[in-house]
Image (cartoon, rainbow, N blue to C red; front, side, top):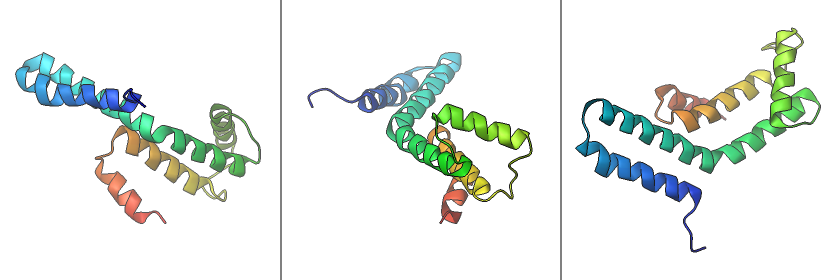
Length: 124
């Protein structure tokens, strides 16, 4: 392919902000550049990992709920069952699903979070 991927484009802009623009900026503008660079890092990780993580989440939810649907529909049903008291942390598979789903989301949003490293080390 002769064009850069979306992930490569986002990474290039983030690297430009971090290595070229941010050292030249001060105060409020430097802060906003850091926020923008962090946001681009999240986008790059979503482009790389979100598809697989979403597919796995949908598979776990389908098995847990015994029904199929979109990821949004499945999550809505899970929330309804938890809210209605049909599912609790003692429901087989629920705690494991919640842990893996949370770990995957944190890996995208905050990959340097210290609790993430501990959770990954604990996972089977």
